[in-house]
Length: 353
Image 1 (cartoon, rainbow, N blue to C red):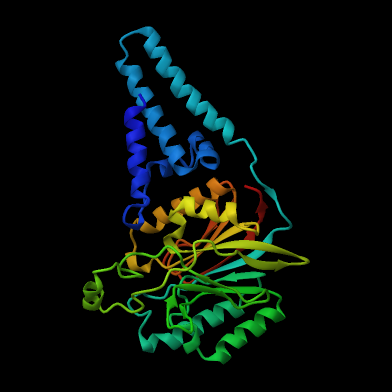
Image 2 (cartoon, one colour):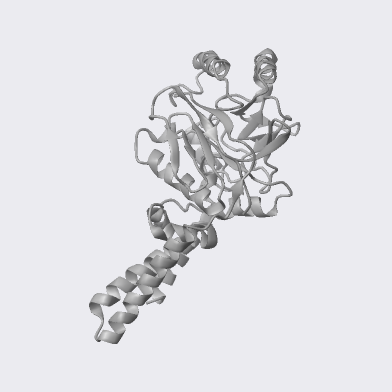
């Protein structure tokens, strides 16, 4: 009953770290809307997978049992796991913190094949400037690499204008933009250009070949002529961004793209940080994948992270899915994909683990 489920989950876990890891579509994600989701805050994604596979094995045993006693034992195991998961869904692991925060999530819908073209650059900046200026929320979030050039190459007046307007409205504008340091290393980054303290975030879990070159494969990236092909990773533990709300701060943990696939890394940030995490902000560009299943799959992964940690997630993406996810992993609202728009709403911060 337990040998095969254990092997299955061990293989899923190995897939999460082998060759930097890619735990996409782990079996536990299928249980987001079932009673087994109750195990997520306690045992994490792999605990959900284990509960599911053991339950499946028990159901199989029911139909292959050789006697009544054995059949009843399998029924009891399946019922115990299901009922325990259901009971866990009723537990409040975290509590509200402060008043809801008004937010505006910007979906720029910039075509990927034009994003890094010089002729498109001015239009891109103008588009995001217009969308920022028309947002009245306390927190405005742009997608990953919304500003598709190093920050030090951007006209300072453009950035100063965003900061000035945001501070006038006492709001924060968090934007995705690559940046580099004085040593010449560059990062896939996030910057706060608003009312709160200036903060930077550097993506720590990079995509092999997409964002950095594994040793020995430099020839591959040279042949592809990929811009920004060898980023440096940021620290694994980075402080959350403070978002000023009245007399207090809401602290937002930042993620770029598929960093929210690695639940253990996010849980470690939440657990070991000297500052609380009240919500997650994920900034993504999935335009690379076209109009396929990846957009909806990634949304399910984000839902699981909120369910595991008890913290809401807000997602600002280039082409979708831009969404607000509550602390229970439920979608509050979302934008249609492949449209230029803003998702206006509120997010309630939560405290606890």
